[in-house]
Length: 157
Image (cartoon, rainbow, N blue to C red):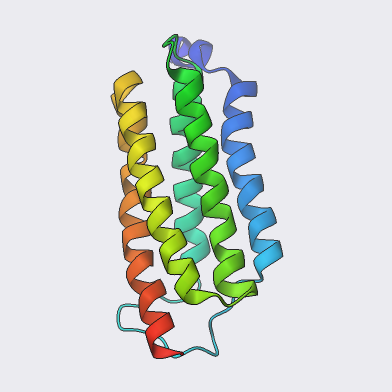
């Protein structure tokens, strides 16, 4: 147990997990997520589930980035740039979908995000396989979100 505690760099962990969560909070405040007035597609989860799932995913993402930042790999810096890029794309999606109501645009933006997540996971895998695996639930959730996004667009035109 003491070995585990000694190997954690708390400041770095807080930077990556906290920075990821802070971005999510700002994005949420700017987008005011609410889809109660929309016709919902089949399989739409209850509204309380979204913040729970996203919080878990953001923590996993932050831990993945933390692991990469702590590696000695020469590609770590480039992998982290890709991480921050995909996170920025992620955080802009709710603004397009909720605030601007650009639902079709948001769908294609989400497809871009999925491509960036795959690229990030592949880069992470080359450095730390566990870090890449921490992104898999995020990728699956975004694939599901793309179904929801397109369905919301088609049902609410």
